[in-house]
Amino acid sequence: MAKKMAPTTGFFLPSLLLLGLLSCFHLQVVASKSASLGKLESDILQESIIKSVNNNPKAGWKASMNDRFSNYTVSQFKHLLGVKPTPLGELQSVPVKIHSERLNLPSQFDARTAWPKCRTIGKYLYQGHCGSCWAFAAVESLSDRFCIQFDMNISLSVNDLLACCGFMCGDGCDGGYPIAAWRYFKRSGVVTDECDPYFDQTGCSHPGCEPAYPTPKCKKQCVGGNLLWKKSKHFSVSAYKVQSDPSNIMAEVYKNGPVEVAFTVYEDFAHYKSGVYKHITGEEMGGHAVKLIGWGTSDEGEDYWLMANQWNRSWGDDGYFKIRRGTNECGIEEEVVAGLPSSKNVVKEITNINDAFLDASA
Image 1 (cartoon, helix red, strand yellow):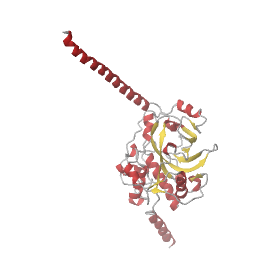
Image 2 (cartoon, rainbow, N blue to C red; image 1 turned 60 degrees about the horizontal axis):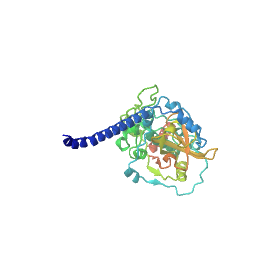
Image 3 (cartoon, rainbow, N blue to C red; image 1 turned 45 degrees about the vertical axis):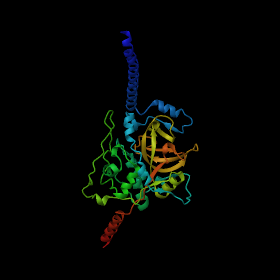
């Protein structure tokens, strides 16, 4: 009897061991998932990160508990980072802008002071709780360039781009591709903000409220009865990537105005208050797009890019930040995109003004 049972016992022993190992593995996977979920639901602002940055003599910047993200979880913060990785096929077909001529570039430059009449350059931006950074940085840069090129102050519509570009630009409030935004400007144009204002002006402020707003619907109709959708469209004549060499990026901004840039955001960036940012601590959170408006060198001798964010004035240095220049910090110099404004519809506006003047003087 024992001899007959031996083979059976021999068969079950390894199986039981295997089951035990599988159970351990299963528990580890569940524990890992729980830890991940726990991380997502934790507060994005951490005293430990602030101490790590502010106690680091080589950090070059200061961290604080920014009011913009009080009561924010990691998950809610990640939702704001709306830059999706651009498909390889898309990148290969994008023309690259190179400024071959040698320009006598200043050591410090700020588009707000270089073009003081252009109000949009210094406008405070707020994307609310939609992952629309890719759209904000593009629309605001094009608005600035219309003023620089044609001496006209217009605010273009983030809502138009966000709602009407569709899958070609990505997923709206769940993220998009910066270069696709500029292609949309060239292909379809973008109406003014007066025609189609941004849907999320107030956002979500009370604790526990739901921040993940759905992408607005594309209505192709101006909110004002006296405005027409097609006549409110403003176009670009080009969509291109700027070569990643810092001097080339500087030449582009110096000649044509602010550009859109994308970079990788880490946990510590949520805590930025002042100084020249570089990643010190924390996990990778996602991709973010902002508007590059200038450059300079700090008192400590560190070169930086000057950026306009769209997290309102309660974040960072009154809504702006500086990031280390010349070292491709967080990939900041890799994906710089822009385009030049078109005179289409602008010519009509100028003609109408002239006609009105002639009528009045007749």
